[in-house]
Image 1 (cartoon, one colour):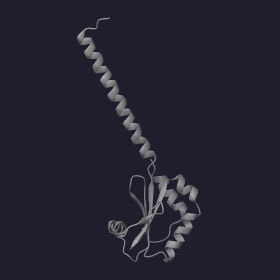
Image 2 (cartoon, helix red, strand yellow):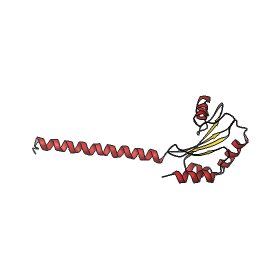
Image 3 (spheres, one colour):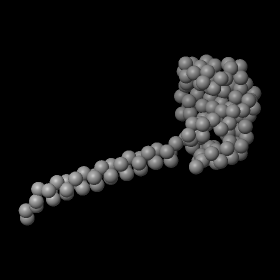
Length: 143
């Protein structure tokens, strides 16, 4: 079968357009998947691990681990000299200091900051916060 050169060029062009479209669709699917797996961040700032509000907040959070996990909430515990990452590993002092500066938290302050999945602050409280308030705020901010 003989194909005219102009027809051959059109076929190659259409194949290129189809392949490029498939690549874009695949990339958009990956972005959507990453977004669907995005997390919210709950930062607990405390002067030290002996601070009463810090212990009370951890106790409150420990009551509903399944709901925290279902909503994909990561928890950072931040002290003046370091802290704990969501995976339980140590946070270095430099990162803790930067977070305190970024969110204007003094070394002797207790504060809870909740970021939604887009990274926006949806809660900034100097007191402990009940799980239901956290869940309500996150559910309200979800698209």
